[in-house]
Image (tube, rainbow, N blue to C red; front, side, top):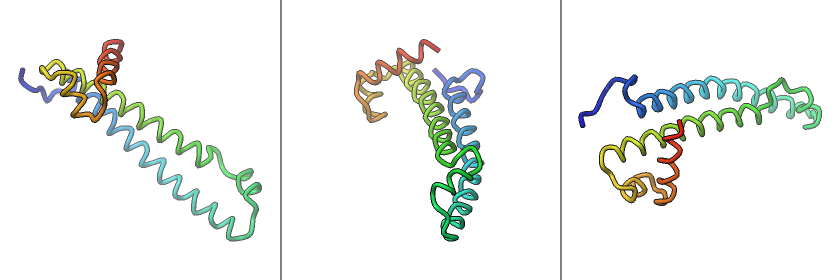
Length: 119
């Protein structure tokens, strides 16, 4: 089967685009985190307590922004992994071959393929 360059017809390309979007979103959030980290460091250098610094910290907190970044990447990465596993299986690779390529166990590949059919 010939590879398609059209994202509308290729779930792996769609998932890859989702990953790119997540990375761009995280890059913007990372800029905010860096700015905020400098503010926290300055406040601490001025002898403020962590209690006061955290209470005064703008919302969302740095830890909340980090959690959002992790969630975005995890979700996009999972979608890509499932789509790619399905595409590789459709191209004739065995579950063992996919497991080797992904660095996971065969049962994990079975779960990925099962999860991808639910979407």
